[in-house]
Length: 110
Image (cartoon, rainbow, N blue to C red):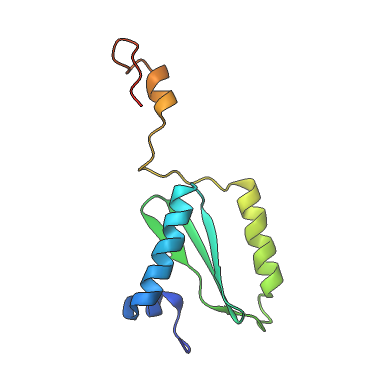
């Protein structure tokens, strides 16, 4: 990967594209805003504020002096603790649909 950012690598390498898409899918399925991709040497922090966008940080190397890797992890942990939720537009809340009166004559289809 060299000095490329993950975003640059994503555009050029099929394997990187698969990895980013997999993490994005995990985040979407679990309705999470934040995710982290890490190797032993490098870290990338991901933010999914809406169901159609994902932002990826610059590469943060293990030996980074600013910011320190531990501080970056702690910051992301604090943000996620305060507000982790980001809706997945592909999931339908059946209970809400039934409660709002959209059910057909009281029948429930599974």
